[in-house]
Image (cartoon, rainbow, N blue to C red):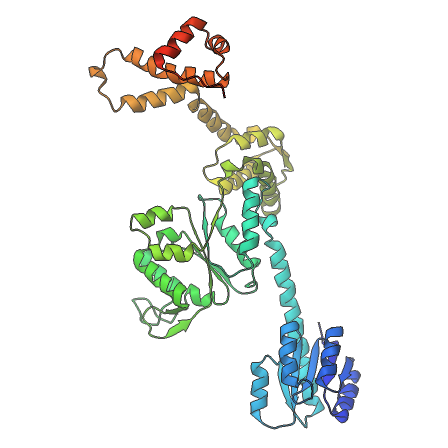
Length: 477
C-alpha cells in the first residue's frame, strides 16, 4: 500500500501551504494543523498513513505528539521537521520511533524521496501484517488441534489463557499426542507472532553437540569449530524456543539452561562475551519429571522454572470420541498431500478405529490412515483396509476376557509361591473368589438375597449360610 493520506502539523503558515501544494500534486490527500492540539484532534478523527510534524509547536510539541501517536497507532509513520541544524533533536526523534527527519529549510525533492521510501516501508509492513494474520489463522487452536471432546475443550481453554502471555510453558503427554503442534499454536497466537519459532529435540542430538546447538560457539572452541556459530537461543531472539524431550538433557546442560532462563543472558561455548537474549521457552516431555527430580536425574530448580504453566495433553484412548473427526481430517490431508483418490471412510471402519488402544496416539492414527489411503483400491476405506488393526483388537479383547484376567492374576500370584508345598489349593482359590463374587452381586441387588441367589444359581439358604460363614456385611444403600 502506498502513502495515501498525510497529516501535516506546523505553526508556520508558509510551511503548511508549501507542503499542501507539493504533496497534493503527488496525489496525496493532505490535512493541515496549525498546532499540536489541532493535529491530535485530526489524528483521532481520521486514519493517516503518515504524519509530518514540526518538532516545536504549542500544545503539544512534535515530540510529544510522536509519543502519543506511537502509543495509539504505532503502525503510522512519522517524519519530524526541525529548524535547528542540530543532530540532538534528530537523534531524540529517531529514538522515540520517528521514521525519518527533515532539517529546515529542506528541498522538496528530499521530502519526495523520504515519502517514496516510506511508501515502500508501509507496503512491506502491510504485507508482513497480512502474513501474520494468515499465520495466526492457519495456527488457530481449533483448526490445527483437532477434537471436540471434553479433555480437548479443557486444553483449548488453557491455550486461550496461555498464548497471549509470555509465561513459560511445560507440555506433558505421551509420545504422539501433538506437543510440538501445540507449542507452535502457542507461538503463533502470541504477541511474538512474526518473530522466530525454533524447535530442538534434546533427545535427538548427542550431548556433546547439544550445548553448541543451544548456546552457539566461537571459532576454535573445539575440534571442527572452524567458524563462529549462533545457537538456537540467539537465533530465536524475540521469539519462541521449543525444547522437546527436555527430560533427556544432561545435568550439566540443565545448569547452563537454568542460568539463561534466570539471567536472560548466555555465553557461547569457548567465548567470554555475555549476550542478552529475549526468548520465550516452551518445553515438552513424555517423562515424569517429578520422579526424575526425586531420582536426582533432573534439577529441581530447573523443573520449577519450566513448570510455571503446566499443560497436559490427553492420550487418544481417553478421547476416543475425537477419532472419527481426526480420521476424516487425516484422510483429507492425505488427499491433498499424497493425491490419493480415496473419498471417505465407512462407519464400520470408524467403529473399528475407535476400539483400538492407539499406543502411538494421534501420530499413529495419522500414519494408519495415510497407509490405508495409499494402499486401498476403493473409494471408501472399510474394515478390510485395517485388517492388521482388527486382528490386534481381537487379540486385545481376548486378552481382556474374564478367563484371561483370572489366568493372569493366578499366574502372577502362584509365581511367588512354591506350589509343591501347598495343600487344598483348589478349595483355597475358590474360597478367595467366592467372597468378592457374592459381595459384588449383593451390591448390584442392593442386598436383596432372593435375587442374589437367583443370579448366582444357588439356594437362598445356601447363600445365607455363605454370607454368615464368609462374614459378609450386607448394605442396602
